[in-house]
Length: 235
Length: 252
Ligand SMILES: Nc1ncnc2c1ncn2[C@@H]1O[C@H](COP(=O)(O)OP(=O)(O)O)[C@@H](O)[C@H]1O
Ligand SMILES: [Mg+2]
Image (cartoon, rainbow over all chains, first blue to last red):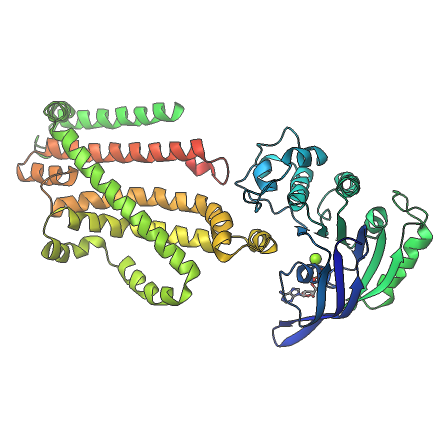
């Protein structure tokens, strides 16, 4: 198996005022190849989990191991492009003099012709594609995506989902994709795990679920997932 | 071009009213010299090289003071950001100096440095420093946490974070501070030269007053205003031409 997160007993809490809020509470998870979707209601700790995996924050207890070699790419909910850099410079941001096939990334993300544009000259969807290309620039073995398309309109979002699937096929990296949308989870995921009450609660291999990768997902399965998320009190 | 024409129209009206007033002979020619008199003085001072010489000297002083102030403001802005400890001691000093008009320091500066260039450059530095310092500090500190997090996710060091994210992100703020400071520096210079100089536009005005040449005083004032406008225009123009982002309408 290639790169992926292996998490055991992960706990993380925040102090808000004089209250300690436990967000992740003994989370266990082993990533497999392909696109794994972490599904959960807003505020249940999805971003916290990704930040811990990316080492942007430190857990209270528990272990996070990144299996395999290679770097980790990160895609945030907002594009977070540097407003003073062009498309190409944004894609290469942080690479230094490192080699990177910018031309290929531009083609893969459909940004050819916009090499010299600044972020404010791009549409929302294009900005997201630049962010995606930036995350892929140093050929990461693992890409973490935090509700990357949540802010987009439905048509653009669907195009971006297709783009992601094509990119994943072309590049072969593993993806940990966070979303609160069941439809999106079913469309992009090879595997769906549900995060509730600080743990992974359900684990579905969706490769053989009827309606996977379809815009009209299987109602039965949607209902099943919905009940997993809603079965517990909203967090 | 429209703006230039409007400016020219205002100038024509002002000179016209001025001319009518002098024709009415309400005041003596010493209190209000005629436009014609001022114009011929201006031509004469330009031909003799007197006026250009003072302009060049004053302009040089502003450039030196402005450059020093920028270096200082930038360095202390970095200190304020990266070394909160030392900045705690610096802040009261700066806030004291900010509230003392630099001109009030002139007696001491003359005592310590004589009436050479040093005293005047210090006055300019002190005046130009604060607007730049405030906006550089704001630019550094107001960087969006979301952009900074991109650096964190790439495991940037603090230095790399600063050079690749904070600094470029602060450029629009820094430019605004520079523009304000440039105007401050130019005005402070004239004040400084009126007190402790034997050259420059401020000296020119004061010297003309001593000689009871109000026409030359007016030439000095108009030159100061025009050179100030020219500086501001050149700076704004350069910024507009080079900056492709983060520039608002106030730069047009
Ligand atoms: N830095 C922080 N300080 C305090 N509370 C936080 C912090 N980060 C996250 N939280 C809290 O942790 C919970 C989970 O947040 P988050 O991981 O962002 O949820 P999600 O991404 O699933 O919407 C929320 O209740 C949030 O308020
Ligand atoms: Mg989130």
